[in-house]
Image (cartoon, rainbow, N blue to C red; front, side):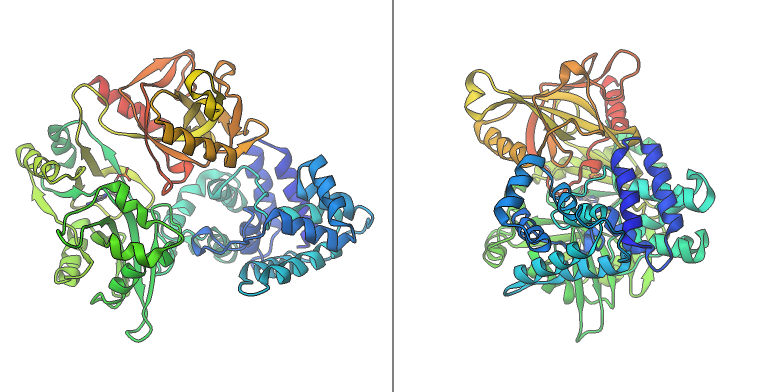
Length: 578
Ligand code: AMP
């Protein structure tokens, strides 16, 4: 396929906000693509050259693109800058300058992809200049519409408003004409989050190809998530019979991948939202490479501890380990311990479908003797509510968050929230039992005391049906001055001109400034109530809303689509009503 042809598809995608239409257009595009290029097309339409977990990024600033455009079309930088100021989009600027050449370029998708991939791979001395030259040469060879998209991709401005999820729907439509194969495709994606490779499999082998997709060290698996229940009795009821209870540590989730021979050990660490964070934790890489296993994928919680007393440190200290600079120093002052609570792959074999009971036995055999900074999580077998409560109380006394109860016969539910895992946290009498992760949607201008920050309150929402975000509350008084300052900076970074087309917000709740869906905020509220003002879960007149929301922390380990969903809010509302 020529990049010109792909650009025509991108233009169609850009023009529509309808989920259905997006799926149909993508399905058409996938049909048109050959098996050798469909993976590249998958990454390109997401504005990337590789899946997100690889960490391969362009690192190409707008200023650089201005220079590249100038170089490509022989224009002064000032001229390009001026045009950019007027039009506001570098893709449109490149397109305008390219209009002098009215030809349709023959450059193929693969050629553009290879070149962009080269740009992303460039590093070291003078790499910025080399990147710039590559882009400029490419721009000068293509038609105006292609130039529009080539200029947008490296600066991260190709936002077409869909994610891997819509692509799975589209792959299903391509293959069977409707969305009925989406579940099967998603099951493969859950254990192998490379949408490009999955698309290629389908193209080559049809749906039988995705059935064969399996876990592979080096490629992250979407984490299993826990449900909530309000009491020990309810948990026992749901678990039927014997089940496991494990302490719920308040650190951050890590997925450790270990493989390779003893002299060429490979280790990768992924965060909860499947970012490659290996470089941030050299101490954990070292500990993982010393594990006495041939290979493995381990799910666990990392938590900081005081090296003198051995005591765990509060979450606020643990998260300081997530950083770009000063990594080695921080590793010394806040060492981490990982408590492994699951294994999804061990010594060359996938364990995803093996019952938890057996996975645990294997983990005990393989990791039971580990004494370093990666150890096995505590695990108790329980049958009664009293025993569960006793363990829970002990955890709370030890300063932990609570417990997670787990079904012993359940497979690992990659990418799924279900009652195979139930979290049970400390509750405050009569209030909702857990924090809620919301997405920042916009901000209201300030009045009174907060006017100094230029903002007075924030609009927050939650993800729901149709890959949309629904408003749930206004967040204002529950913020400290420091939090206001931090939020102000975030709004500056994320603000957009128009209301994103994935937002469902009522006129009366509309904020003064919109922000794109990116930032996840952990919120504690007194209660979930019903209000006509918000759209979350609204049927006819009233939706859910939060009473007295307070910001607990920014959850930068979560993507917006992983925030608490409307469905979960509905369940919490039911729990609260008793
Ligand atoms: P959630 O992410 O909301 O489903 O809550 C469960 C979270 O608790 C996981 O993502 C882990 O980060 C954390 N956690 C701590 N200890 C455990 C454990 N023993 N088993 C599962 N999750 C745990």
